[in-house]
Image 1 (cartoon, rainbow, N blue to C red):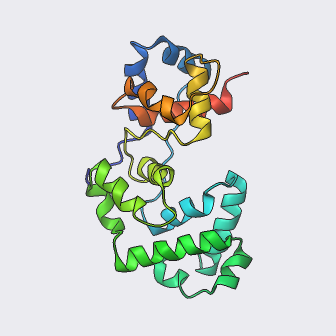
Image 2: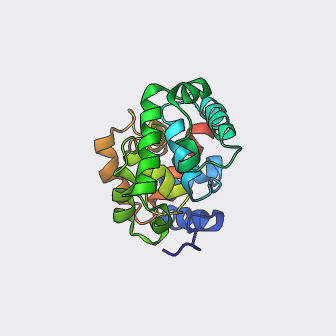
Length: 211
């Protein structure tokens, strides 16, 4: 995938879900009920990966507030070099926990000294990009999947660790209980190579379908 490609755009999502819906009545019904999810495109680069770390285990509102305060320290232009100028108390005052301060410092070190070359990520395979991102302390599979979907536009991510995705998929396919992470992998096999679009539909369904 070249740096100019973002394959998970609005039209591609619709085309993918329409292709699935032709043979999957559950998906067809879900689309009929809530419509198509929109694209979620985020800038590619250090600032977005930083936001992924800041947002871990936080509500969207809380994450956005803390990220805004951290970015304000750097005049709205986050770079590893700029972030490393601030001591721990300053970052704590901005809202970062002690653990996340360690994570963002690991990110800064990985970007400036290796092994994470952010500029190379768009040209890597899904497997290699996943390995590169998760090599950084504090960036696990879920974090890598969020970045790969929304900044790299990868079309076959399957974030089974996301609770809302599991709940949404369970409701779409009429499971009595939400599927476990282990159950989600075989469930998702039927939707390759469009699992990112199905994850987006699951989020959309979770938020908008009547109970």
